[in-house]
Length: 227
Image (cartoon, one colour):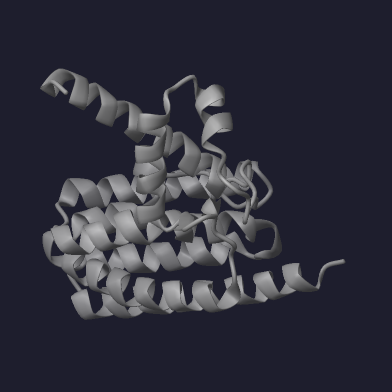
């Protein structure tokens, strides 16, 4: 395989992986469903090769599991896994917030304040509807993670945890209340980062994620008891 063909193959598989990831996170591909390579290859108009590589990427993100003689399946969310995932997230993002307080440039702090203003405007215009669909540069947490400057920390969170975290957030958004409280907590975290108060930034981030974990637990319990 030439270098050019290899790059195109890798780019195609990455694009498919991103599309499949969004479909899984948003529930278009249901939890626990079997991944049919034949159906997906037809749907996306690609060969099995890049599709299989995309599925391997999804497995690395924790969205898909593969077992012998069964094949690949979308994960099924459960409370125990969520609590374990968010315990890791709490520790790692707390560290990220502390590091960001040391390394985040003033221009990025200003951009993050503008982002929170946009989130405030979104809540005002949409009757306090959660803004879980926002991602990338619109995701407050990811911006802080990247501002930490720690490549291993960034990789652990963005490549191994965040797809599953988004899946939990998306599937329980309707049961969670008071997004304005989360926004207030975001502002307090950013204030600590802006003032270079690393210990406070870490403490506030850990409290914020611990609270989110408990709210998610309650929301998932409500989902389980629904008829």
